[in-house]
Image (cartoon, rainbow, N blue to C red; front, top):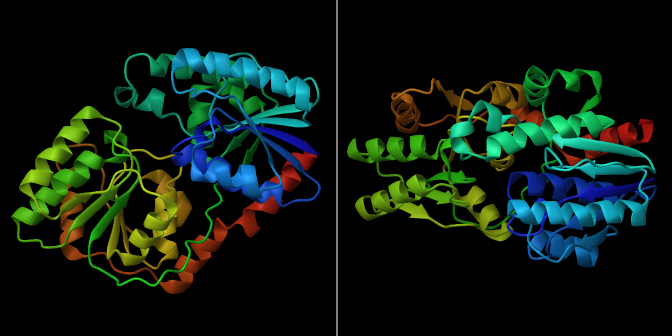
Length: 361
């Protein structure tokens, strides 16, 4: 079976969707019965360079970044051409939508829909993108043969806004989360956040809570890592960096640094307002770290009651509620419960299930 996967978010500085694609590509490429072809805009990230040089997957590079709207449409001309060149049994769009009409005359066309945030939280995405997203998802759903979701929550939200999705074949693929490598580090007591820095991720809640924490005598440091996505978040962070010496922002980090941070930290904090999944929570749990997160429905689905959650209500007291958890200290989850959750998202557990499903369709 021949797969052609559009993984343009993997080309440079991948975050959530890019890493989702990367882990699935690695798993699928190990199967001798699959021939995996990957499309990216550029080959810059360590992940795509590794696939290009060391994997059985064949990487096709467009040659220019596709992060601007006009470039995306040009990029998809390249995608259409590759569909005819590769003639895949399955073309897989992993990025929520394709902004143009796609056909795969050689087999099936599937898409992964991760979330509905541009519709449910348009204030986090600028003035134009929510309309682009809604139009693009509607067009994509009409064209595809099947939809993959990375959670039941994402499926429910998609079908709420796009009833046509209920009539399509669907599969919950979840997200493969590879084990965090062992590393000899000195454990430290800081709070850690890894992810994009933006309001949707609750970065403002975290910064406000940490300021209150220090004002009330707290001494643990706060380390943040990831791309800053919003100007007001950057301004707030810079303000607190001058005021509070315990805040340390590391920017976008590589895999080795990410491993060290997880292994070193005393507590992982993830106060997101909305998530389609929440990979960093599972990664922190792999390292046996206590986790404080918002009480989102998606986290209940993924980890049940194995982490410490604060009550998120989208009001001015969210930071106070998070603060209280930070002061109290999160209790370590039961080891057996944690292992059961972590194993649920392993390549071994998920990989064969998706390969079987792809064979069926």
